[in-house]
Image (cartoon, rainbow over all chains, first blue to last red; front, side, top):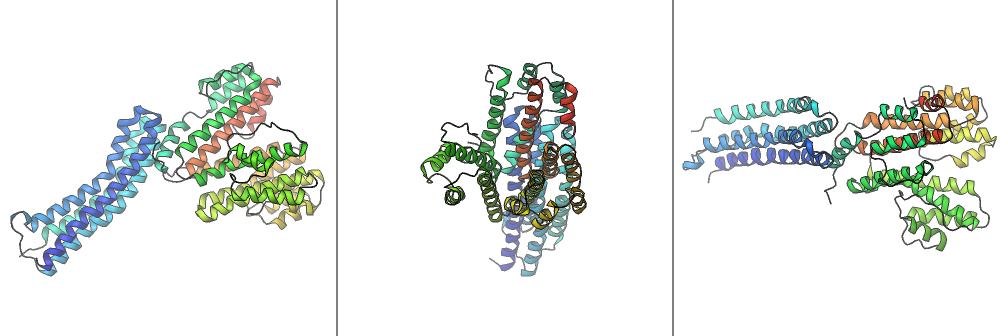
Length: 157
Length: 331
């Protein structure tokens, strides 16, 4: 296997597992807060569940970028040859969603956990609680876009 | 056993906060005709453990049961027992004071609080039999110190001071290790407010500076010298000296009330309220200790409030008077 291919696959791994770690931690934080609320008030389950799902998106974005790199490398149909320089470019392209995904998922989880507390007090305000958490999503989406543009338009010989 | 974590504990607390007595309920309790009616309103709020009270005069049992419920709940969800124990330490200190007093007068069966961080039987063994195997080192240390210094002659005042100091010394030792900035700040403020109260009390007793300086608890932010100097000066000087501190309002109003009628009740309530607001203003973090501290304090405060109303109702104090006593702080 060539160095370029190895570097590009490291990019795949980074975008999937770093963003995935962020989402796993984020979902766990909101899940714990939700379990706390639901154990006292089981009726709140459905509202809490929406909030718990929000920090999960970063992991999906990371997987998406990894998947696109794999397609560009044509992994499923005999891998194309990749120069070391192109390999580095793929690796760099994976970084925005890996890093921003990790951090934004955990921060979003804090906002969502606060939102779970808000729902515990005022269940009718679930929309506002979701809105606060969704705003953090913006930056994960921007990172996804940056990663996508890089890995999609890198010329592969 | 649920997994203890900050988000889980705070999630549960957020729901329980809905059950705290709100202004409506408090108002209805103040307006209630008899002590029994107050208890009915408390029963609506699921106060205590549903035990029957023989008469309304047994309300202390109900309040003790409610505090114990809070204690059990916190023990169940606490993500950091070492930190939550700091809030129960005051009950250990109280128990030790009761036990040492009982030992001195040769009494036996003293009613102890069951919400301390140390099992009361362990404390009993330590005080009565000198068996220190089940008490933490700081208790063992202070008991030895008390036996050495005051073994011959029982001096309730100095023993209480020694116990209070040992308690706070332990708190700040734990916090130094835990590096929890919020609690550090919280307990510093509590010590400051207690030290100001000591100053007022000593002023009222007409004792000298040496007496005061032996009582001041270390660890606060107000310099001991400032308080000792204030002892021989008019209270206005103290109010002036603290005018830019965050305690300005508590001191201004509390000290005035003390000067007017020689009572510390107003000051104590203002101080409680100051601490409660401090904690509340910080308790929005869904992953921090603040909300846990906030809930414990809110419940303790609520129990004090119910006690005030019950005492008023039992002694046939008029509704207006009760409201007046509560108004300064709670409404």
